[in-house]
Image 1 (tube, one colour):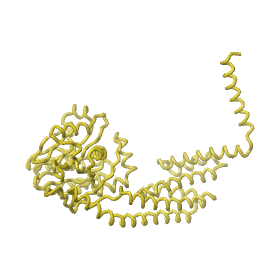
Image 2: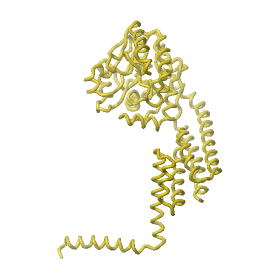
Image 3: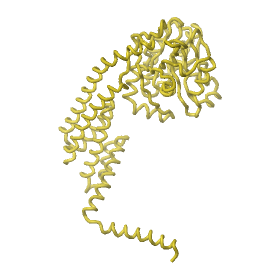
Image 4: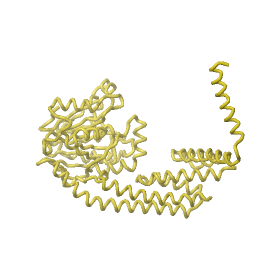
Amino acid sequence: MSGDDKELKSAFDIAMERAQKLGGLSSEEKKRLKEGELAEVGDALGKRYLSGLPIRDVELELGKYKEDRQILISYLISYLLSSLVDKISLANPDDVEKILEAIRHFSKRPKVIEGIRDIINEYQIALEQARQEIQGELGTAKRKELAKKGISGSAVEPAVEASPEWLETSQHLLSEYQKRLEGTKSSLQAL
Amino acid sequence: MKLVNNFYAYLWPGVTMQEMMKYGNNCNSYLVANALPGNKHILVDPGQVVNETRQKCLDRLISEMKKDGFRIEDVGLIINTHAHPDHYGASEEIRKMSGAQVAIGKEENEFLQLASGEMSQALKSMGFEMPEIHPDLYLSEGELRLGKDLVAQIILIPGHSDGHIGIYWPEEKIFMGGDLVFDGSTGRVDIPGGSAEALKASIERIAKLDIEYLLTGHQYGSPGIIKGKEQIKRNFEIIRRSIFPYL
C-alpha cells in the first residue's frame, strides 16, 4: 500500500468511525442534537419574522413540526425576546411593537406581555429624565465652548449625546433594563 | 469659485447628461471663508467621500478649495442641510482633518434616529451607504450668529426630508436651499421623510424672501446657482406651474 492509499484509507476510516458513532448515540445525545436543530429553526423563524414574514406564515412553518411545535415556539420566543433586549435602546416603537405582537400571539400570556411593556415604558421615561438632566448641565458647558469658537444664537442647540457622561449614564440605564427584560424570559419559556 | 464677498461655491459636475453619467451623484458645497475666529471657515453640505461611481468627491472638494487658497484643515464648522448621505457623508472625515464642529437640523437628527432602519434600507436600495455622523450641535429655526458679526437665519424647510434646513444670509441675500429647489425643478419627495405638501409649503415660504443668489444642492441638468431676483422669482413661478401639479 502506498503512502497516499494509507491517507485515503485513514480518512475513510475516520468517516466510518464518525458514522458508527452517530448510530451509537445515546438517547440523551440524540435529544440534545434535536434540540440544537430546533433552536436553529426557531432562531431562523424569528429572523424571518423580523424581516417581514407575516405571523400567519410563521404559523404555517410551525405547522410542519407538529410534534415539536411547543418546543419550537419557546425557541422562537426566546429569539424574539433577545431581539427586544437589543432594540429597546433604539427609539423605534414600531420595531418594539412588532416583537411584542409576535410574543403575545405565540405565548398567549397577556400578563407577561404587559409586564414587558411596563419595563420598556419605564426605561423610556428614565432615559428621557436622565437626558434632560444631562442636557441642562452639559448643554450650558457646550454652549460656552461653541461661543468661544464663534458659534452662537437662538438656532443653536448643543448635542450632548456624544459626551462621555451621557454615554455612561445611558449605557448604565440600558444594562439595568436589559437585565429586567432578560428576567422575563423564564416566565415565557415555561409553556 | 468665488461667489460674492467671502462666499464660495464648489459645484459638483452635472449640467450635461454626459457629466451626470461620468461623475455620478454628489452635492454642491458652499464655503463661507474666514467667518469664525482664527480665520476658520464654514462649509455647508460637504458631500460624500466617494460616490456610487467611485468618484473621489472629497478629494475634488479639497482640490477646488485649494485653488481658492483655502485648506480643509481650516474648516471650523460643517453645516448639513439634511441627513442624506450625498450631502453629509464626508462630515466625519473632514472633522478628523480639521477638528470642525458638525451641525445638522434638530428635527432631521430626530428623524434619522427614529427611521434609521427604514430610511437606511430605502437609501441602501438606491445605492447609498449611510456613513456615521455625530453632530456637535443641532440647528432649529432661529438666528445663527457666527464670528464677530455674521448672522444667518436657519429656516426649517421640510418636504424633501423631514428636518431639512435652509440657511438665509440676509446681508448678502443668499439662500442655501439644499435639495428644496433646483433650476426648474424640486427635490424629490418619494423617499422616507418626504412630503409633497410640506415641500410646497416650504417653497412658498422661501419664495417670499429677498434673495439675489439661490444656491441649490445639485446641478441636475441646469446650473446650480440661480442669480438675480427676477430669475429666482421666475424659477419659483415655473416650479408652481410645471411641478406643483405633479407633486
